[in-house]
Image 1 (tube, rainbow, N blue to C red):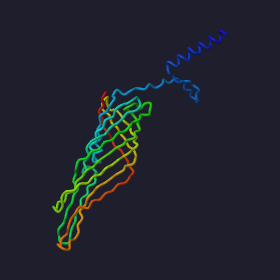
Image 2 (image 1 turned 120 degrees about the vertical axis):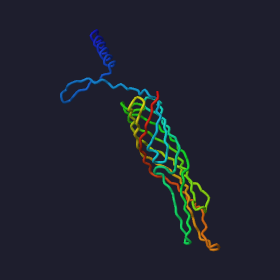
Image 3 (image 1 turned 90 degrees about the vertical axis):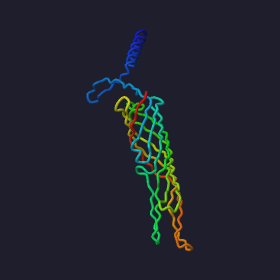
Image 4 (image 1 turned 120 degrees about the horizontal axis):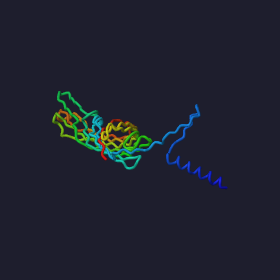
Length: 242
């Protein structure tokens, strides 16, 4: 009985020693040699938040600022906000020439007006070596964007008119955030999703008036709404804060 108790005590002692060292025994089937591998220790990034700017979003007509904040060891939340300008980058312009048989014309051009956007997303950093605010992440993102624009008739036949574009977007993004120094980060991302869009546009409508022998001009209001497939992508530069 004493031998059994002593053996059990030795077993507990050895088990306790291995548990404290947190070592993993790996057997190589080719050589049947045992090696020891130290378990990885999770290291937390010193920075708990990041201020960001997305220069490539200017292509889409956005001046994009962001803020990411750590909420626990594996996740964070991110907010983006800023103004929109309808006539910069690849934003669509809507310019029209209208000509009547008597040689007069009306030229209507889309002009830029400020709008805004705001978005929020949750980030999850799943990798053991991809710690919070650092490494590979997945992120669902909700976004609202308003693009305002104006319509001006340079011929002087009509007063100015207004148009707009409203977007409600949901995307599922994948990305990788890396730190080039202790306080400077680069965040590369891409994703897919759906966008609900609602447009209001105007173009000049001309109708011949038999009583005056001239053309009467008016704004023709067009509306559209629908859902489209969304592709996201870009890069963000950031400054980390503790």
